[in-house]
Image (cartoon, rainbow, N blue to C red; front, side):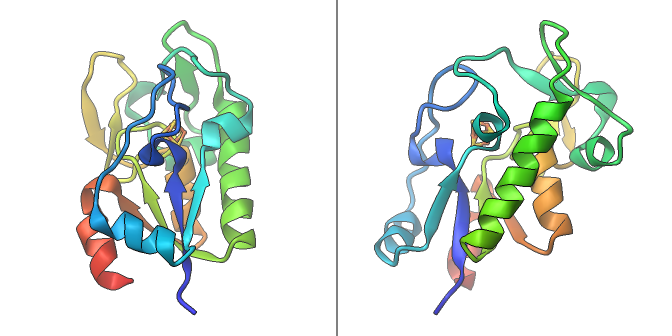
Length: 160
Ligand code: SF4
């Protein structure tokens, strides 16, 4: 039996993003994986305790998810609130859920301070991105789960 795929809930159109919307991804592989019962939907920020809608948040000062996991950077809301603990809790829950559901892969939306895997915003809330992972993506990668961004769905579809 092929391994399951953890997917950002917003990529399935679930209205869980900070702005109360989803970001539906359209690709034939999604239908195939759904038909095989292999897609496992999860939103780390909701699981950590965030509400919908919520203020946008970014990892401070050009930091990455690895920096947050190591205690070198915080996750801050645009309003100044420190939500580092919530993001860490959400990442831990995502990893536990991925293990429970036997996910060897994760397909996560890029750019998010939780789910980003290629690039994230730089903490200035000015729309500038830099290379790096969000907190959940970094923790899943550490645990050996193969993380793909939504922009890499073709590569994941070719693999599994
Ligand atoms: Fe989507 Fe991930 Fe943000 Fe949840 S935490 S809204 S799944 S990008």
